[in-house]
Image (cartoon, rainbow, N blue to C red):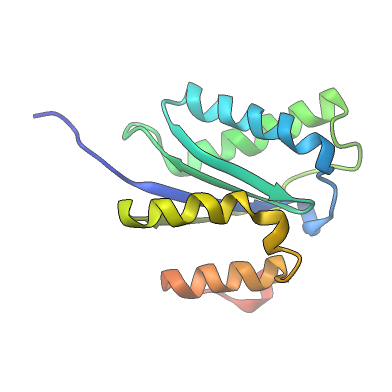
Length: 148
């Protein structure tokens, strides 16, 4: 028998101490770089976007790829690449940890524009409020101290 999966992941992570260092003009090259990492790991990217202090990645993974390993690869590779290229001069590190939420095929069409409209979304909502809502909606227990 073959392996069949259809798991959509919405991955969210922030810059160290949520510093607003991801410059708007430099985000597109960063998103393309992440896209390449995921593609090289047999994944499919539906949308990547973010603002000054955090990123959203909507993707599906090949069943042989571990989510935690992929996120670690993305964070380590992009951190080294941005520093080496001088892409976002004030970037130092990504925050430890990440949020990852699974979604159904029925939710896919709503999640793509949600990720695409992050700049607009964050004119009204803070990252902490957004993350809190994602956690609550997914039924994930969390400690408020880690959202600061």
